[in-house]
Image 1 (cartoon, rainbow, N blue to C red):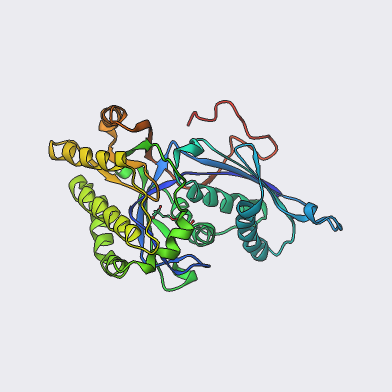
Image 2 (spheres, rainbow, N blue to C red):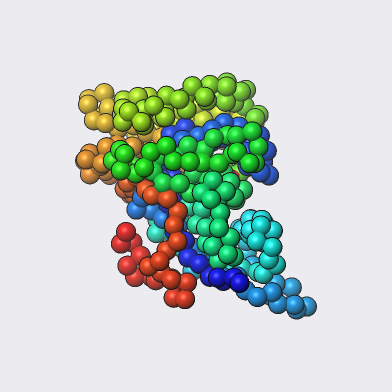
Length: 348
Ligand code: DP6
């Protein structure tokens, strides 16, 4: 008996040790392990409703449907979700089509990768609605198939994705809960003139950089330093390794064929300012994903001060604050029978 409809909520995450490049693009088996922190306060909320299979000659009625932020999505966006749902259908032994309704509480113009929270919430909502009870590791493996970084949004707090030897052992697990270390991420939104190359295309280019082999070979050392910095709550050690890792990934991006330049002039200005602030005693460090925005990591007690400093930098449009977030979860405040609330959405 199918539960039919479930709503789930997941946070995006920011990686301190980055995932860039796959050993297997289809299964999203990464070239190296990664470590991240979930971003509490920012989330994707997704409702999945499995319909009874309708036998009809009208093909469009048999397709999954997808609405993101009240906008119907078709084409590549829908087929990526449908391919993912095919895996859930296979696991659950069902053939029903699904209706997926999803909303982010962070602006899509912010350029914050929403695929991590999107596929983490989709994995939990789709499985629960289909009556599948997966362990956290199984759910993380499944989310990985939708978007690599999504596997890290399944567990809570500080999370490690072990590269693994294959599909079965490439999943993420929590290395420390959110309350272990009250950090914050002040995301400095920088204007992007043109749309950057998406992560999926970028991963496929990683191996064309002569620097990728060295980056991957050194990853176990960086993972070890980062894990220890988190466990010891050693901000200076975290800052050193997170900035090095971000710089290494961008060096690979800039030297791939074709090269990918994600930074804007303001990105570099902020990076330099962050290093100066740290030299003068403020616990801050930067890390940058596949876009021009700068994630400025700090201790929660300093978040307001850091956000103010960033807001006054040239080129910063907005600062989005986030704290350490918990795991993916079913959203009991918004039971499946009720439509997604529009008011009060930003209140957690
Ligand atoms: C730079 O997980 O977005 O943010 O698997 O193709 O969806 P796909 O890629 P994605 O890649 C994330 C890349 C990154 C680094 C990171 O989050 O580790």
